[in-house]
Amino acid sequence: MKKIFFYIAAAVIMVPLLSSCATYVRPAPPPLQAEVIGPAPYPDAVWIRGFWVWRQGGYVWIPGHWRTSPPPMQVEVVGVAPYPNAVWVRGHWAWRYGNYVWVRGHWRGAY
Image (cartoon, rainbow, N blue to C red; front, side, top):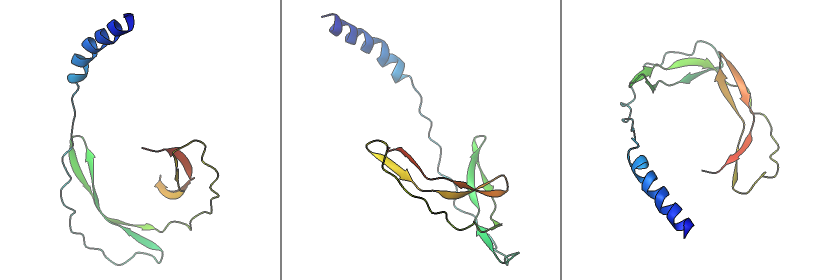
């Protein structure tokens, strides 16, 4: 009987609190802008197309640019999943602070 009273009291308190939660939905970004892609400035250059990014309550266009191509992929040995429903995220090169950095593959929980 005490458990039932506890659950009813918790529901009476929590429902008004949860119903006042606000949900914010960002609008879809504008269409991609047309860009003129000039010749590559060096032999191993790769074109990174422009994209929209959300900043300070609105979308800002980041123009396309040339960047050096990433190094070759690394070989990774995938072991046994550490827990059920784990998902393997393979390693990849990421552009950070003006250089490519290898982000090692890792296990993560499934969504």
